[in-house]
Length: 277
Ligand code: GCO
Image (cartoon, rainbow, N blue to C red):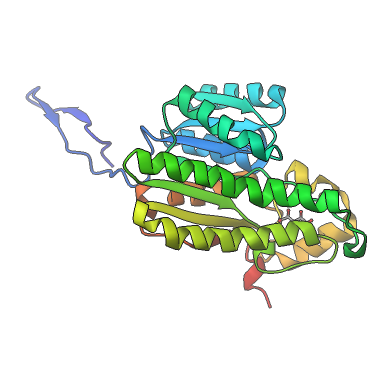
């Protein structure tokens, strides 16, 4: 198929410009994406995927070395600018300053991907309050505070914008020993829907992606557990653990013009898990 503005020399040597048959539905050129948890795993894959579609990306993670490497790889693979901010999203008070730093460095933010997350697993009757608070702060409270910063920024910029929250199968189901994580992800879906219906008037869409069991650092202990691994594969019709890259297409859809009429939704990328009886 002819690429956009292909220059084709006709037989008589005239240069003929063809109006592009392509369209810009998924083009993110000129957009600036802030991705939390962007140093590795799902966040890194999504940050790179948005950059592949033309976006400039700012990634946030706790460890500076991880960020250096991630930015270098994104810039090398996509020729798009990537910058990094070492920050722990458990530091709720510091989020306003983080967002201001990102806007100062990148010039603005059009897409916010809330991917940073943590989990504490154990018997619910033994949950320590400090662990509960930490999981709620990172997985839910930080998302609200960052989204508030984003909304005010977008309103001042004249409106528009995309928020993509990384949820979980636990937005709609549960397994024993993950109460803090499941509660945070259930709350994340409710927050996604509330902000979607409230901020639609600002032209901001807010959606969630619900990953199935994805092979990342967060699930290494689970992948290594033979019984757990067997259970995951028995519940996944596509019979494999997901890869972070499996989520990129959905993130691009929700961030781009192609997804402009989608808001308040959760798209499960779960290998068929939730479809299975
Ligand atoms: C767990 C896992 C899950 C996955 C994912 C599934 O402890 O069962 O961490 O929570 O990470 O959220 O969608």
